[in-house]
Amino acid sequence: MTIIPPLTIPSIFQPLIQAWVAWFTVTFFSLPIATFFMWWDFPRCIYGLLFQKKPRVILITGADTRIGEMFALEYAQSGNTIGLLSSDKYKLNRLADECNKRGAETFKLYVDISNLELLRDTVEEFLSERPIDLLIANTSQNDIIKDVETRWEDMFEQVILTNINGIIGVIMSTYKRMQDLGKGQIAIINPTASNISIPQLIYHNMTKSALLSFSRDFRYLAKKHNVNVSIISPGLIDTQMTAKTLSPISSFKLFFASAHSLAFISRIQLQQGNVEIVWPFLETLPFYAYNILPPRIINTVTYFIGLIGDFFTGTNSVAWV
Ligand SMILES: *[C@@H]1O[C@H](CO)[C@@H](O)[C@H](O)[C@H]1NC(C)=O
Ligand SMILES: *[C@@H]1O[C@H](CO)[C@@H](O)[C@H](O)[C@H]1NC(C)=O
Ligand SMILES: *[C@@H]1O[C@H](CO)[C@@H](O)[C@H](O)[C@H]1NC(C)=O
Ligand SMILES: *[C@@H]1O[C@H](CO)[C@@H](O)[C@H](O)[C@H]1NC(C)=O
Image (tube, rainbow, N blue to C red):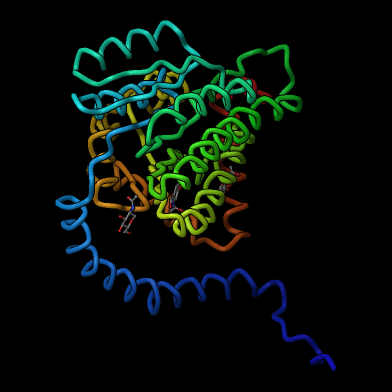
């Protein structure tokens, strides 16, 4: 027997009801739980800092980017073994030299992240001989598609290949090894901008959202094997890439944090065992607010963001993704 008629609300009222439910949830659930977390975190973070073992063997992907480079240098000290994965031979050599100088034992994993087979072999070779403690996973390319000959309708394969297949391939190879070792920590870098970005970055946004939900489920599955998964969510970070893509905004250096500060903050928070590392924090608040809007309102916002995107980039400019 069905309940007739299915209880519903006329569609014109739905956004209003959704907004009200969001308010109710924030007031009666989010606030009390967040307050509880605050007290819970005091001892947890201090305990992590003091007693958690420091990672000794670290694998860093996307080592050719500014952020990857800073992470490498952050962990480069004597006693540590660092694997650097990148498709840029020149930058890789330079970075490896620098890490060696700081006393770390450094291995260069030179591979194009879109060549999945080679990627897996390279990563597994590195892992098989060393007890990996920490993986810092990130795709190093997202502004690769500059080819104006290619229509944006045809670009999805390449973006999905590097941003999804490549990154998840590395994560899974590492995870299997960590399972054998019975411990490990995996940090997935996923920019905050993926929560709200211009529609002209359609595939980028799509893959980053996919990665975000992947990380959440993966955290649960990995926990059973004593592998801890964290997400590092950088906001505006001063890198060459942001200088290029965010050209009108990037002149306001005030809003940008350095890649070095991101690496430092992340290292401390990974040590504390935090699962969501957000830096710089304040500028992520608008993104946060955006995410609790009712879907109809999000769609409207996306539409206007699209108009602004068109204005700055010219229509059909998905090519600069
Ligand atoms: C990580 O990927 C994002 C986007 O794909 C990029 O902005 C960032 O520079 C990359 N960082 C590293 C460490 O590879
Ligand atoms: C994972 O996190 C828990 C606490 O949440 C901690 O007890 C454990 O040692 C961590 N495991 C590793 C391998 O870091
Ligand atoms: C980007 O993805 C997020 C989900 O992570 C979504 O809320 C947002 O609307 C997307 N941006 C655009 C412009 O579609
Ligand atoms: C934004 O995305 C990052 C990962 O990309 C995630 O850690 C964070 O929770 C998201 N923020 C909001 C407000 O959804």
